[in-house]
Image (cartoon, rainbow, N blue to C red; front, side):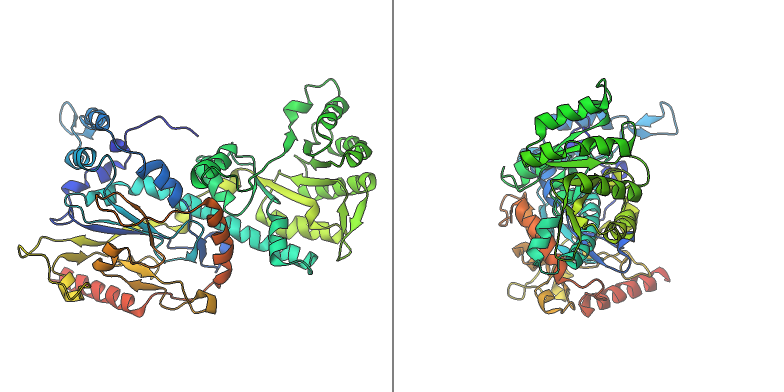
Length: 539
């Protein structure tokens, strides 16, 4: 869905625009914030795994688009009377960091002088583990880290929700196929299911291009063409990675014909040599499927594959009826577990599709009727793109800020790494408290160490990082993905094909619920921080 063009200088929550007037001295010179998912998806149950996604599109569409001098002029006009007032004329100028943006345009080439470190898209991780960490040490630019929050977060929680839900769905589908094809390797099964779940959601998703890209992290079937184009063109160096669709008839291409059979005959004549899908319930589903079945010999002789699509009625009943009609007309092949596979035909179900319907109703009924699940593909519309931020309680919290120097000289350093006492001279830890460990923010930058996942060791994955670590880009799996400062750190880039592979491989390295993956030192720092704030509040 397109949006009206707006300058970067107004793409913000209003209250964040004024925060530069409210922060303590020193915070404008250094700020570090983290993005954290604080709860698992409802469909995941006790499974705390998540797929990190959305950072690559955010960076491409936002941070790599320079802010122009004209954006300042447009913002001046907008903010000039945006603040409500209790006195006539009942409005006045709203505070916004104009000087910060002037410097961004004039000194930084229109680029935010911040460092974005994060998990690469497709990386599996756990609830509570920071998946993005953003900071800057450019003087006067600290508020950039806060300004981008309301633009950044929708990319992250929507993409992670769709990608995680897709990975959970794929895992369930793989289990079904593994039972039906015990002789096949994991790689073969993965290829078999890649096109079995299709994105029908472009008309149902509010931000369908971004969530459509997240769908493609796990699947290759899609009707959301702009998502497939964007993923190939901008995230995969212009190379196609396998996203596909097929020609498909809709009611609007069937009902205008004088007779239903004429619509089917026309379609078969044009596309009998390949894959083609036909909606069969324009008037009566069973009758429509029998009409389509009448073209079985033409399709078989042409080497094509005719896919019938129910679009109303009970999904289980419609699928079983369609399978039986096509089995009689096209014939079947018996696979290794004695289940029937249609020859040159299949069914795609796109109406009333949910995970419950697929795995608890349709697949069991299809297998009980003696058919193989490989005969069926699914299309899902709105629900495939549906996201609610509160489901995962995604948060973006500040963990460390600068404070005014107490001396003219920089804080003393012990070699290259300052100790805790020395760092405290120039930085203040910041934390939001909660009774829940997952809802507590972290009063320190962190580094992520996933190196022991392959041997099923999930302890101490989240460890404290020093400021010196940040400035070297040495924060483990939180790699540098963007650096807009004049002397940037090396930036990690990769192709969408690598993102897809990581989503598959890294998920399998994790167990569903490992307990607390934090270094105990961080928990002690949190408790110490809470105790200090509590004591100070009682004075």
